[in-house]
Image (cartoon, rainbow, N blue to C red; front, side, top):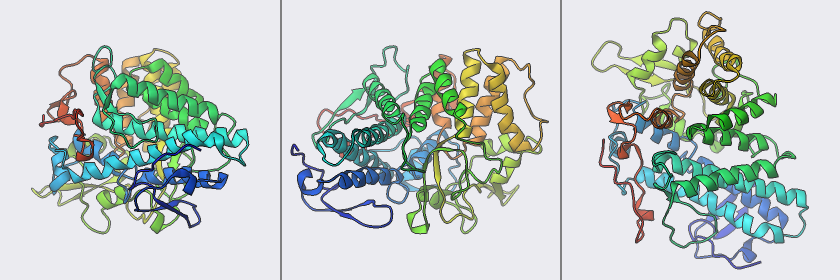
Length: 466
């Protein structure tokens, strides 16, 4: 086994404890892999530890902070009561000393590093069958792709921003190395992410018997559908979303409270499961949005609320509550996370995939009846009847508009609207499409790289507001 130095702050001493077998990390100097990773069980625990990083410390990664950054930049939330780092992001002028961004940024690269260690070493490990090696490699490719994908969405302009996609991308890491890494092009990052998800889907095609919360072929395909959707490649997005939906493994929750719950949802395609209060994967949501115990840190924008409130009978109005109504102190709170000490976090789910399929079908002018059915499934759940359904003869424009509206409502606080506006800005070649006054291509709608990436030659974003 070749020698690789682990990041001192990532892996130094490894102890295996707890029912989840997650890795506990203690800071020392360095540790060579031959001193820590010797058996098949060690590598199982290593990949488990990469999953554990996805939530981030206190929800500082996909446990709520990544999603919040998107909502702040898009102004899907209000600036009332915002201070410090969050206010900087909301104002679209965060500096590289922003502690919230720095806290987020290191998390995906910890998971990426662990995935890379496994990919470099797993073939030489004794005691594993080829099927087990393929499954572990599939999970590692999936996690590496997912983490790079999230960083790319927040720190780089979207697919198509330049004709050849040679605009700046991200620090792309495909080796377990501590060496400084400059930004790739967007194209290089995109190709790597696509390749990793495709490899994951292939390697996991025979299934993953580890159960709920682990990468699967369908999870990789669902994220590929999302990657293509955000890249305006709608035929590919339709094909893959249709494959996952048609598998029959997932059912649309009829109870609107079940998507964010503990063990109740049937929608989750890739989920971070929470076992108990001390193992809560969605702390970044509850810490910022929960409004049933104290006044929440983050309030919701009036525009989002009105999209729901103006439609009589929409049960999703129960996701919101208005404090100090009709006064200068009026504030709107989200209730999605109320009453929940812990819940499973659905990172990609059937509702999102049905809306990807619906809009993709309409934009490619195919299987419009399927698209109409997807939207009507969601509307019938929201209204309890077919009164607000699209007509069976709805045209493509009506379907596209309906899909985009339902995405904005259904996925509120889940961090999607920012990327949807950028996607549509590219698709329509629009210089007028705006997010609360900011043109979609404004550099202020990107995060600035934190100080830990300020190495010589590294070019940041310099948002400077919008």
